[in-house]
Length: 139
Image 1 (cartoon, rainbow, N blue to C red):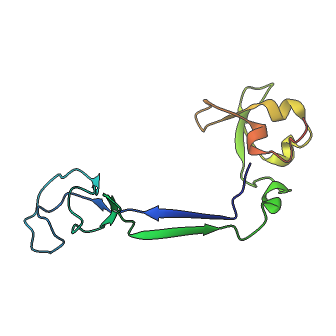
Image 2 (image 1 turned 30 degrees about the vertical axis):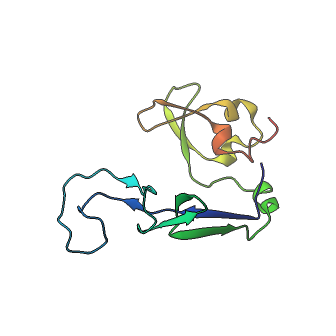
């Protein structure tokens, strides 16, 4: 996995199609059910959010988002705790649903491979090892 220290994302305006008109006045006639669409450069540089770049027109971003990594990803990669919520499994002998937690599965290969069930007893397709990665590590 690659962690970027800094990512910059341009934010562009979209038109919700709720008014007719060529400007951003509040007195444009209202429309219903307009299609939400991105602003296009069109053929005029006088349009809102549009600028000339050499011989071409381009849409300008209205904002810029900056995401910066504040902590080392090492902290994330070395998490030593499982979630504390419980999950349901089908008991091997009785066939009844049982509520369990990650401590129940710790170090037990067969338990870590069991499928987590929903409240109706239907399979979730998720093994206990997904819920309890620390308790089931290396099995």
